[in-house]
Length: 214
Image (cartoon, rainbow, N blue to C red; front, side, top):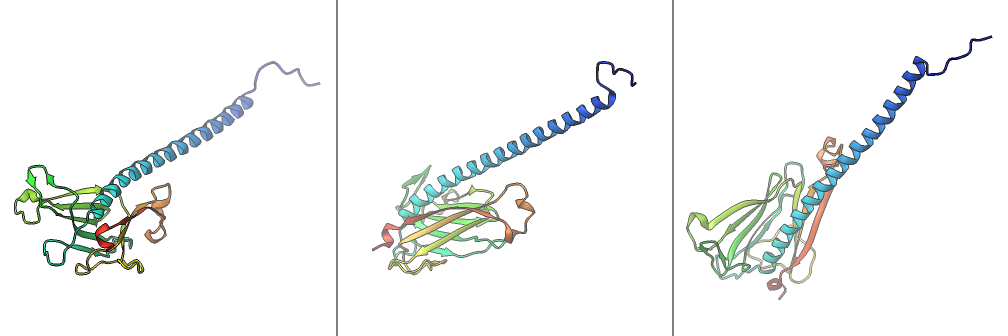
């Protein structure tokens, strides 16, 4: 007859229980860590999109006030089609707009020059406050959005033909401009993919150009 087992746990039972507890704690921690990482990613994307929407609102106001007169050499509207280092769109647009009257201590003309251009991963904004001015502070340039994968522009001719990727300076104004900000997918594992296989997160809008519709 086997001796009667005394109350309590054997060493093997204690070790087994400890191992099981460690596995459970590890699973809980891993789940929490993944949830926290996902939350940080969502917050970052939300912040980027919030900033980008403000930029698109500014861009829309300026495009809607775009001005071009063929006999005035100080006015322009010219869009170029570019490609960045990763093969994504890196377009640029230079135009004159009547969206503001004064800027700080520098008197602006009735129209001023604007340029949007993707440089690296940064959308740069350059403003010429007075088209006839020569003061150093007349031209101001600063970044609008950083961390972009691409910047795409398309233009709709006044007669409603197909969208085009470029706009020549001597063809007047388009009837609409489509602008798209392309954000890279920064989720876990996305950066390990080749550039051509990475998923892009677009934020796009179409803007009417009132002076280009007639």
